[in-house]
Length: 262
Image (tube, rainbow, N blue to C red):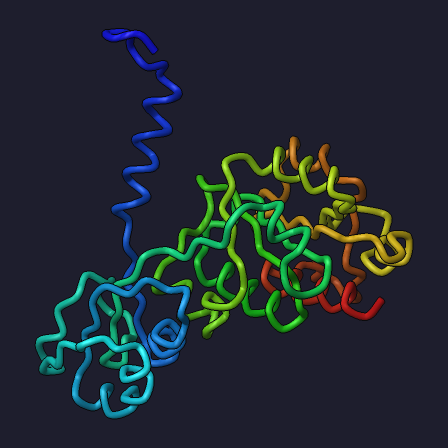
């Protein structure tokens, strides 16, 4: 680029986003979430705040991490987390985890050739529960759009009960583009829709041994039109009774179980 020439707007935006990501930190809280983060060698840790009681419970993990904790009075537990959060006297400032590219994780990641895609699921408690189920049933990743999804937060980590440290959570620029990329890798994309004719079990049987991407929409609006169009199949979870609706985290657990049984 010649001297004095202006950078294109998209280049400026990309550089700005990269700088913002480098500065981003997350406060994890609660004994379980903090312990798992301290014991995760891939996690970059910055600041550890503990009460004496919490330190006694986390002493082994603290020693393993090599961090020097700040021991504070329980009445003066001043860290930037939501007021009323059940922190149990433990809070840890960290950098978000970097799991690598979608291709790296989806093709050669640990676990079964199975991923979960979340279409605008913004509740951190739901995403945390999905991460937990994905780990239990051996999925390679949970994938969500960078915008209009739950970011990595203390609330998400606490609900995930340690899974955030072990289960890849990839946030991509465009969900439909990620779905197309997965299809090119050989994945069959199965979207959950309560009105669909095909059941989850039937779609899994049709897939044979091919990799599967389970696509879940937010409660209420469900899958967006573009997301629906990008799926290979729309499926439903069979139900009995008049109330046939599960929240997204429960639906994900049922669908993950169905795939794990093939």
